[in-house]
Length: 407
Image (cartoon, rainbow, N blue to C red; front, side, top):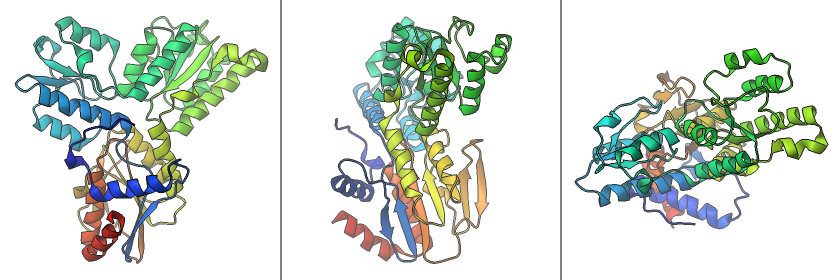
C-alpha cells in the first residue's frame, strides 16, 4: 500500500506500535478482538481498527505538500478537508482558508478568487457545478485534489451502471459534502435520488410498487432527486450506491430491501436486468472500523469513549453502535475530559456539546472501550488515555504497559 507523509504531530508511537503488532499477528484481518492496555485499576480496550484511513492520509499528504509547494500564494479549501478539528485548525494556522462551511454555505465569495490562487478539493470530493465555477476563474482545481479514492470508486461504479440505463439510488445524508458530491456526479449521467435511511427506503418501495400515488413523490423526496427524474418511468432499473461513511450494514439492508421490491415487481428470473449489484462500493475502512467496534463490544466493560469530530459521519456511526450496549461518550479532544466526574461530550444526533457528570463509575477495576473515527489522529487517542491515567494516578503503570507494547 502507498506510503503517505503525515505530520508527526498526528502520530502516536504507542498506538502505532499496537497497530503494527496486531497487524503482524493478524495479516488477513480476521481477528476483531480488542487490544488491552492493562493498568490494574483501569483497563483500556482498544478496537482492532481505528483512526486515520487510506483516504484521510492521502488527503493530508496532498494538502501539506500543496502548502509547501505554494509559499506566498493564497491557498483555499472548498470546505473542511476532513471532519476533524485538530487537522482543520492546523491548516487554518498555516494560512489555508475555507471557501464554504460543511453545509455548502459560502464563507468567502468565489468572485474574490484569482487564477493565481490555489484551491484544494477536500477528501469528500466536490460537485461538478462548483468545480466548473472554479475552473472558469482559471484555477486548475484538479491539480490539488484530495478526494478519497474510495469515494471516486463509488462515482466510477455509478458511471458504469448509468451507462446501462440504471437509475441511481444514493444511501447518504442529504446535506453531507460527500453525498452532495456523489449526487452531482451521478445526476449528471442518469436519474438520481437520495434516501437517508431504511424508513425512506420503505416509502420508496411503496412508490415503486404503486402503493403510494406518484403525485406525492415530491412531498416525500423534496430536493432529493434531479430534474430528469420521473418516478413514473425511472424505477424500471435501479442500483444502490452509498456515502462511504454510512453504516455498511444499513446500506446493505437498504440495498437488500429494494432488491426484494424489484424482484417482487419483475420476478426473480429478470432481477439482474432490473437491479444492479453494487456491493463493491462499500469502503473497506468503514467496514473494518465498524466490524472492529462490533468485536470490541463483545468485551464486558463499564463505558465506551469514541473520539472524532462532531461532524464526522463515520465517527457518529461508531458512537451509534456503542450506545446500543453501554454508556458512550463522543469527544473530539482529551481536554473534554475535565476531571473524574465531568466530561463534555458531543451529541452525535444534534451535533451539540453537553456536560455530563459522574461519567466514570466509582469502581475498580474500571474497563473502558475505546475507538476513534477515520479522520481522528492517533495522538488524540493517546492523549485521552493519558488524561484518564493522570486522573487515577497510574502514570508508572502506564509507562510499564507502554514499554511492553513498544518493545
